[in-house]
Amino acid sequence: MKRLSVAEIERELAGTPGWELVEDSIVRTVKFRDFKEAMAYVNRVAEVAEELNHHPDIEIRWNVVVLTQTTHAAGGLTEHDFHLARRLNAL
Ligand SMILES: C[C@H](O)[C@H](O)[C@H]1CNC2=NC(N)=NC(=O)C2=N1
Image 1 (cartoon, rainbow, N blue to C red):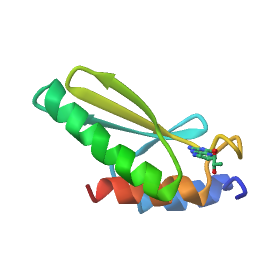
Image 2: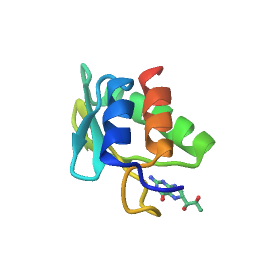
Image 3: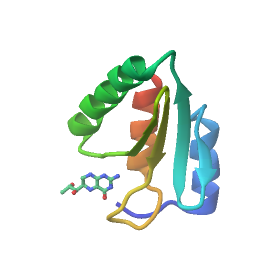
Image 4: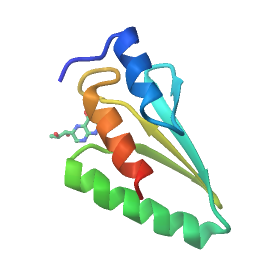
C-alpha cells in the first residue's frame, strides 16, 4: 500500500480522534489505573493487530501505554494505519 500524502494524512487524522502525528507515525497515549489494566489493554490491542495483520509499536510504562503506528513496509503512514487506529479506538 502506498504512503499517504500530507493532505490525506490531515484528512485521516481529523476522523481519528485521540491520535497525533509524530514524524512518520501516529501516536496514542492511554493511561490506566495500574499495570495490570494496562497489560489487559495491550492484549486486546494485540488481538486486533493480529486480526488485521498490522501491528503498532507498543511501549508500556507501568500504567501508561503508548501506541506508535506506521507502515514499516511503506516507510510511512498508509490507510492501514488509520484503519487500525480506528479499530483500536473502538476497544
Ligand atoms: C507479511 C506481513 O504482512 C508484514 O510483515 C506486516 C505485518 N505487520 C506490519 N505492521 C506494520 N505496522 N507495518 C508493516 O509493514 C507490517 N508488515
